[in-house]
Length: 143
Ligand SMILES: Cc1cc2nc3c(=O)[nH]c(=O)nc-3n(C[C@H](O)[C@H](O)[C@H](O)COP(=O)(O)O)c2cc1C
Image 1 (cartoon, protein in one colour):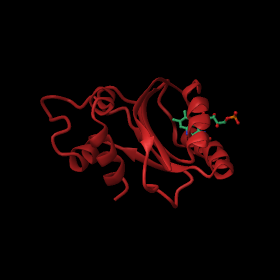
Image 2 (spheres, rainbow, N blue to C red):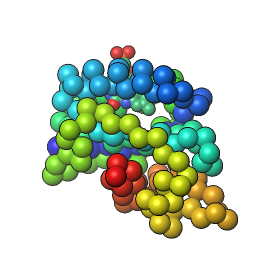
Image 3 (cartoon, rainbow, N blue to C red):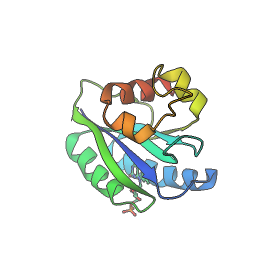
Image 4 (tube, rainbow, N blue to C red):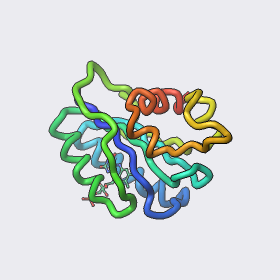
């Protein structure tokens, strides 16, 4: 199994309908390519949001192919790799692509010490340089 985690900035705020549309596309191809994963959408109440954090997992070739496609998508920019490599097993075997809408409160609860009220969280800057926290956030965001 191979896994990629990346962070990006949404080009514009995404409505629920736009996020749903994105997921329908994503799930179709992920089904064909046997990919699974989770997409976090950080709402505009966070410092450098709206932004995304996504984990994509499956066979290496499929992950790399789809990651290349995603990276070129105009709905986001500043796509930055947080982590990439072989893993023992999938984190989200049951999700062709899950979606979670993350707020500041969720983040503060999920990842203690990641941003504080007097030092607002900067999602991209902090997560891109800290793959362990990024992974922790992906796991805890689903509870
Ligand atoms: C934040 C974000 C996450 C995405 N996640 C996936 C994904 O998991 N799988 C996927 O196939 N496409 C995903 N897409 C959509 C692809 O970029 C692309 O639009 C889609 O695969 C359709 O490609 P096509 O027009 O060549 O069919 C994502 C796009 C964005 C902006």
